[in-house]
Amino acid sequence: MAHDHFRDRIPGTPRFKEKDKKKPLGTEPFFPNFLLKEWIVGSLFLVAFILWIIFNPVHLTDVADPNPSGFIPMPDWYFLFLYQLLKYFPGDMVWMGTVVIPGIASGLLILAPWLDNSKARHPFKRPVATTAMVLTLLLMIWMTYEAEVQHEDALANAPKPVDKSDMPTDTAIVDEGDAGAAVFKQSCAGCHGQDMKGAVGPYLLGVGNKYDAAQLEEVITKGFPPGMPPGGGLSDKEKIKEVAAWLSKQKQK
Image (cartoon, rainbow, N blue to C red):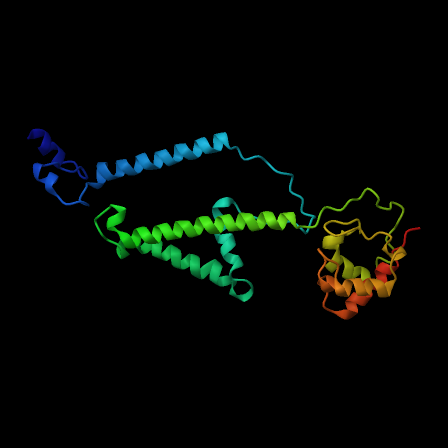
């Protein structure tokens, strides 16, 4: 009795009496019973994650290069489902995938203790909460998988790096103050390089030896698959003419 009286004087310490054994499910003391279970489960997940990292190390990739414009950005794996969600709301509807849907999901998660205040802890006795959790988890797994598959497919179909082995070395860029040169630097250099030695797109040194201004204008206007879209990023026909005329002057000596 003295020991039980001492425990009554410690705030937060539950009293265990004979009648407590007959209490319904859900009245388990938070400390230490419930909290101890949470700690044990959390520790198991932490140990499993550490072991996964040890036996599946993440290797560093190539050094970051800011020049290639064909780089496809990709978030870490735990954000892939949100990355995939953005693809379903393109253009002006992107705010649905960035703010509204994640906001609603976060709000429901915060309000979960008030929306479902059942004292039962068995999943089968809480069908609404269990169903919502399982469906959400399956949706996240599927969207993560889809994001990874589509990213690998995009990489497989991305333009290959430019082979510079047969690039002319005795060709100088002429008329760099020309209006067409300004258009090229602003709209074309991202793919073809500021020095015209290529990046994602082919190099254009000596392109004037192969095509005249009219032919270059036609190529730019129609595009050049798979990497160059019609107009080459230019919608102004006058600018297309200017850059085509300037490119026709770039001849190999």
